[in-house]
Amino acid sequence: MVVTKEAVKNYITPSGLQRLRDELRFLLTRERPAVTQVVAWAASNGDRSENADYQYGKRRLREIDRRIRFLTKRIDAAEVVDPEAPRSGRAATRVFFGATVRYADAAGTERVVSIVGLDEVDLDRNHVSWVSPLARALMKSGPGDQVVLHAPGRTEPLQILEVRYERIAMEPFSEPPGAEAAPTTPARTPRKSESDGRLPSWTTKRDE
Image (cartoon, rainbow, N blue to C red; front, top):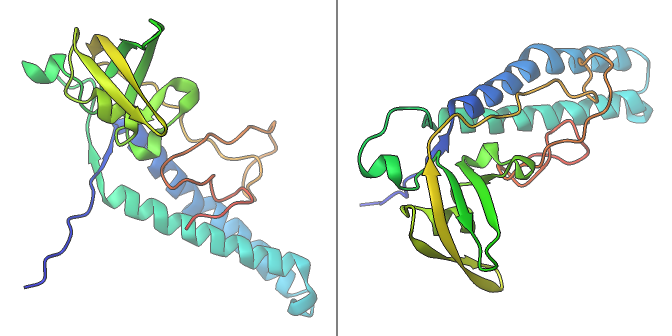
């Protein structure tokens, strides 16, 4: 009998899932049609092998299609966990997915992080992935506990000060200024993502 490895669940908050859906909708209904129109126009201008607009457009379509496939898989695998949902007993006082945790490091410096999904990581907002070394160290701990962070090249004791469950503010999806279908807006630095280790598909880097 062949034993198949169970796929890792894509834990995500409601806001994070909505952002993925908004990006997918944008790509399917606006960006891809807009780029397809550009490719069709470029193809009508003559020799495709030496047509820079045509070659660029075809490359963009491949990037968009890769991103669409990636988003579709992530959405299909989503396991939504609402940090605001009522909790009781151990689940209300211990660190699990969706928790916002205040802790002190070895130097006594206090920090606050929220534990979110792979597709929701935002280091500027202190949103860390539930599979990150920090989140793994914090998991199942409660106020007063001491845990050990095992990070590359070091270990560090952490003191848990507070665990709470509340709404985790997410940056909503916005149409990127570099997109074919996007209106002219001031440039914005793309948000870092741990979901696939790459920047969004409308940048110079590509999704796998």
